[in-house]
Image 1 (cartoon, rainbow, N blue to C red):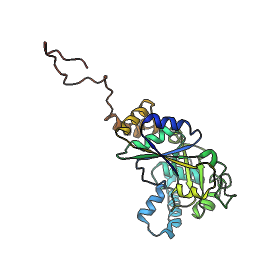
Image 2: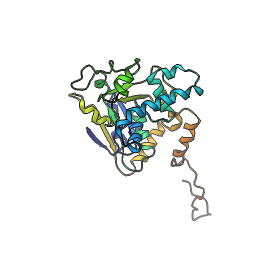
Image 3: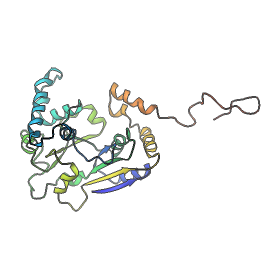
Length: 275
């Protein structure tokens, strides 16, 4: 996997503009591999991997049995991908991995809570759209599409095909729209996306990693994203998103716009000096 160090905002912006059609994911720790939340949860709390398939199926079954109490359109629960997206949206661990078509949204999620080196991963969607794992040429994106009835059980829940599918549900919620979101769904839970993609043959890189490193880089990038109106308030278009966005407001001070509450006094007449 190609790894590129990012030292300033202009550098990232220039690279991002050249990756037209790619999908992006931000992670606040550059050392983390690209796993789904379900994979991380199972790795941490269910060490017996032989039962992972059963545990995932049971979790989905429980959600479907109880979610009807809270949603008006029960058809969502009959659609595998929409059901998983709904679970993901409300915090359940699923095998879906959040990506975005915007490198800037990915940068926001990478840097928002970063205290060390963060990273943005980029997937070569134009190539992956028609690609298949080596030796399994029939396992194309179209053939394994989880939006088709039965495909999720066959190609994903079975947890035996080292493949990735990328896309969105047929009907997208407000959050997915606001974030220019898309999903990556792995065929196996015990391997990160970057390892699964090693099963694909391509003359072009399928995944790239951009590591944000350098003093004050987070502040520089977050200010640039703020100016682009990329904040929690816009990415999560509800009251929760607005509340989350206040955290960065605590950090922001626009030089020249904020009046010093204790201005220094000049030598003559003790007149407050202008900023």
